[in-house]
Length: 505
Image (cartoon, rainbow, N blue to C red; front, top):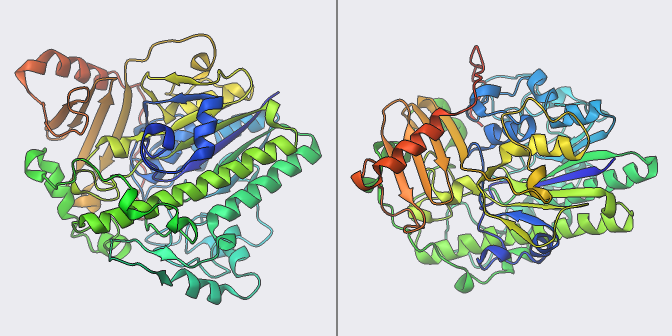
């Protein structure tokens, strides 16, 4: 029975790999793509963390598992029925290390979840799961450094480790030290936190320890190693913050805010929400002021640095599989929950403007029987990974809304027509309610707000930077109709009743 290691980054664009042509240094992931199969057109089923991660775990679309946006907790039973629970039922040990975000961290009131900032203190130092089908868990609560790591008894495993020796205050001062140069780029600084205390290092260390334990026990396993970076703030620690010179990074070709050329909801969402709960919790973390080219260069350089650190960490994981003599029996999958605008169209971070940088993520698979150097251009989705992982591990892979990628990892090459994305937003997210539905084929992308009927259609062959909205263009009438039929073909099944929002992120 083979093993599976799923490695995820957070908010990592599908074009931010060396093999994808951008000037980011990812030698390990580049080598992994040469040694295995990469999917060049992989979409996330949702562009924010909680829905995307819930879909990755369960193989269900957001409207089906119920986590339609951040702020909704994945029901425990639904989570336990995901690929981890299936693999556990098949006799494999299941482990999760890092950022989970299956439940909300910033809540209106304590929820009892181990990921809730206000409830985490209820879980003692001896708690290591089970959680959402994973028998063994070691969690980073949130992991994004707009806030310093919570002090115990709040937080979970990373936070307790961070403060355990009593020197957390020193590390916090170093973390808050902005190394020169600082050009005022939004949510960007070079951190003086020593890398041995960074959460990327911790996720790697604990993942290696889990692998060593599985080897000692002689047990088959499925491990999800989940890195919180390169999510904003863009705060790579030295020396990784200096790995890419700002003058040498690639700027977005189209970096002008052009809301007047877009569907109505772009301008409405950019204006933000007046809901005081949103303002209190999200603050200015989702909307960014326009950046100069100099600021954008420094921001991208730091984003690249965070990715380069993760790349080195992935190298350590792959090396550990070799020296533990597990490589030949282990599938390794690398992907992300969603992407990042990174200055495209003058935008930063993420929101309901579903440009390519946000919806497309990387996907690489290596392991026994996986062809080396294979590049698949069919549109696929991280929704497909639950069935894929369960199938690779010999567990039950039925009952998901995704389709296993296993045939594509062998000699079969079934075609895929499109990948699908959905996002239901209420007014608290950006001031207006939206039900966004998106399909992406090899050439075209259609996004419709199902409430208003407005939409956008791009011919990505002739217009790769999505500059010209062709929605309702007579010249693409038949194409638009076909894409609308694809949206209408969404698999049946909705979460009833709708889940209650418990927080914002």
